[in-house]
Each structure stands twice: as structure tokens, then as C-alpha cells.
Image 1 (tube, rainbow, N blue to C red):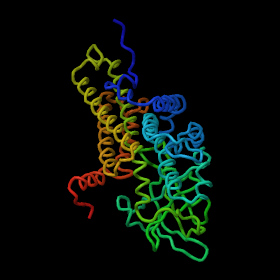
Image 2: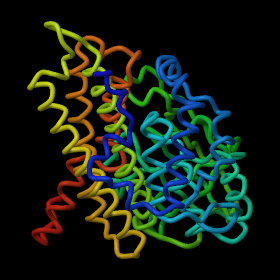
Image 3: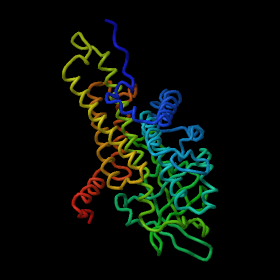
Image 4: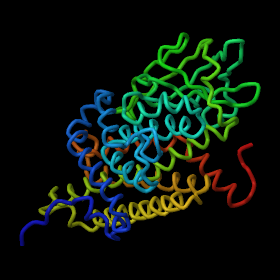
Amino acid sequence: MPPRPPAHPASLDLLQIDDQLSSEERLVRDTVRSYAADRVLPHIADWFEAGTLPRELVPELGKLGLLGMHLTGYGCAGMGPVAYGVACRELEAADSGLRSLVSVQGSLAMYPIWRYGSPEQKEEWLPRMAAGEAIGCFGLTEPDHGSDPGSMKTYARQNEKGWVLSGTKMWITNGAIADVAVVWAGTPDGIRGFLVPRGARGFTARAIHKKMSLRASVTAELHLDEVKLPADAVLPGVTGLRGPLSCLTEARFGIIWGVTGAARACLEAAVEYARTREQFGKPIGGFQLTQSKLAWMLADLTRAQLLALHVGRLKEAGTLAPEQISLAKMANVRAAIEIARQARTILGANGITLEYPVIRHASNLESVLTYEGTEEIHTLAVGQALTGISAYR
């Protein structure tokens, strides 16, 4: 009997979940998967090891229509939520850093301008950001205030010419390469969003190095020292925490889908390795313990994929609630981490090398676990939905 062919992502879809995708959504899937295979996968291990992600990828992603793809107008693709989710899945199957770049650009930088910006702000930034000609970042987290952004110290005061911003933001994806930062700051009227362009006097961005996770991603600390901005630098359409939190809800949706791509890549690597790695005279995929691991990994992946698809259809219908996002984010990230860890055990010592994608995804997922809402915070959001009692304070 001839040997079976290597596993392909489609063969891991035992319940044929992708059959539920529309023809447009499948086209997005195939386009992004092909781009990642040709342009990213041959180099991603080297980029991860070097701690870099080439900036020239950004206009390429723009040309594919992936930047702000779920927004309408201003050169954005205007795709549906599930198409956006599928794109995030295929991007993160290559690397979480690639999906983070697209997610931050579209959901955290472009989205607040698109939803809360003035017509002039939209015209100035969105077409260039959609094309990948300008990069954005999202400044909310501070060194001492992560899960409690309402206690931020960054502050903006008005003067006769406009606004003056002071403060520090931490762990900002794209921060060191961004052309514009959407910075959230306290004001006498509440928290407001401000567009801070690169080069503004008093505004500096310092890349954070020595990371052991999300290495193929630019992470920075933003420092604002009496940065003077014109009066029209503020986003006019929102005041209060609901502004930045609505942006995080958009980005978390992409995570729910994205981590299923990382998990799928780990399972695919484990299946291929189990078919070819021989011990005791036969492939380790022929042993019951290995097959048990693979079967449960597939079960976890399938549940995560179904959850992502259901959340996508809820968003499509306009009925998706923040607590549903919290439930899906915490469940899918935990499932992906467990799949990555089990895949590492199947690959043995080979599982810790960059010759295989597993340790890279496992390391990245440790960051995904805590960014854009830690597992603990999302757990409390779900707990509040169940009991009606807030456990935050």
C-alpha cells in the first residue's frame, strides 16, 4: 500500500466547517493562504529569530485589500466580518505577528478614525492606511495601567491653540514604525482619542527588544512630553472609555479567528511529523498515545473553529455583544495554547526548533493570551454576564 500523502489544512477540517463559507469568503481564504505560503512562510523563522517584520509587507497587504478590509469607503474593501475573520486565521497560521500588524492597522488605528473621526481626519488618513502607505498604532496601555485603562495617567489639556498631551504608553504594536498614533488620554471632559503624527515635537517611540514572544512584530513604548497638537487632532465622535473599548472589541474578534490558524498550523505539523517519524520500527502516528493526542487536538480545534464561525455570523447579523467576544477570546486562546503544547510533545526535541512552526506559535500565543484583555479579565466579564455582579472592584 503506498504511503498516505502529507496532511493539508483541508484534511484537518473533519466536520467540513469551511463548507459553510460563502464563495467570497473562500476566495479570501485561498488568496491570503497563498500569499502567506509564498511571501511569509519561507522567511518567517528568520524574521522571528532576528526580531523583525519587514515594513515592505505593509503595502503588499494593502494591495491585497487586507488593511481595514472590514470597513467601507476610503479605499477599504468593505468585506463582511467572516471574511475578515478568515483572513485573520490565514495570517496567523503564518505568524501571530503578521495578524497583529493587520489587526492593529485595521481594527485599532483605522477603525476609531473611521467611526469617530471627522470627515477631514478620515480623508487625511484612511485612504493611505488602507493602501499601506501609512501605518497606524493604538496607544491605550500604560506601564502601570493595563487591565484598568480607566486609571490612565496620560492627560491632555487645552490651551489657546489646541491640546497638550503628556504621558507614556507601553506595549504598542507598530508603535516604532507608525506614521500616526491613536492615543487615548484623560481630559477634563473624560477620556478622548487624539491623532498624534510621527515627528510631532515631544513625541518619541522606542522599540522594545529582548522579547521572547511576538518577535516578528514591532512593539514600542510611546512617550509624550508636552506634545502640542491642533484643536482638530481630537476624535470628535466619542468621549469616555467606550471609545477605546469598542476598538478592542473589533480587534478581539480578529483574535478569536486568528488563534485557530496558529492552532491549525501546529496540528498540521504534528500530524505530518507523526506520519514520518519512526520509533520502535514504525511511525509514531501508529501508537495509541500519539493518536489520542492528535484526536483531542482536532476536537479542540474544531470547537474553536465552530465558535469563531458562530461569533462571525452574530457580528454579521449585528447582534454580537462584548461578553460574547470575551467568552470566545478566552476559550479559543486557551484551546490554541493547549494544541501548541501538545504538538510540541509529539515533535519531541524537534518541537523547540524553528525548523518547525510549533514553538514559534506556542511562544506567540503566550502574548495573545494576555493582550487585548487578559484571560482573567475576560473570565470576569463572562462571570458578570452570568451573575449580574461585577467582580472588578
